[in-house]
Image (tube, rainbow, N blue to C red; front, side, top):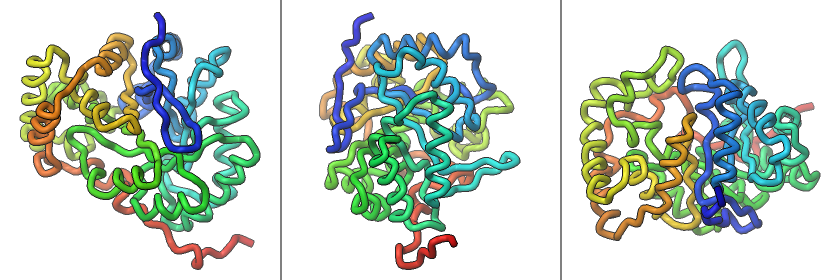
Length: 343
């Protein structure tokens, strides 16, 4: 299959990616039992052959097993992709803690390079800011890793506008990754404008609302015991009952446009601008093909207004994480003047 997916630039440092990426987390973690390599490697290759060349992983997915999977999938394919991974969350006995001190940053990078079986990471994100370490200290070590050729571009995930500004002053940030979809729009007030002011690209994770905008309420019927979505407030029965109204309206508009609800929700993200790249995840080739189809859906200004009116920030019930994960709202780091270098 010839690649016809357009390319976009993220940030001003030279990173160029496919206009849609592939989130790989669900292949190995959080959304039920891990899928087999025999299933996932062909899916990854199909994505690349279809023109989806921007792949997203993290050392915490598994932990570590998703990076190992990608390392195997990309043997002989490395030059065809832009590979993003993340550091910052360490798991001990099943409990995660956030780290951004220089020694940890370096050790995490070396570990990811080894698991991915590569010499250089295209885009390296801090998965969550460490609220014990000034962002300038973490960025200083990331800058060293760029200068040493271990990473090409630096990203932040779930960072506040002020954290983004402080980080960008140390070394240019190419990308901020954040949750952005029809049912998650809190980033539009401050964070998106800050990224655009500074020339930083935007990567939208969970652009399909963790599957709710593609499947609707019935998605909850298929959650396994290992699926962490069942613990998220938006997927609790009382909130699903309310939130299904959004899915029903999206479905109505999709039928009118001749596309699926998932394609409509993804198209809405694509229409936010050429500095935005959504990274929907999937473990099925048919869903991957459907997601690619979203790139062909054209929305008028009237369509956009209609969608935004039915899915405003106030119309969704339930927090994103309900305290299960830090977000940009609690991501502030201490001032640089407070940092005492470990002896």
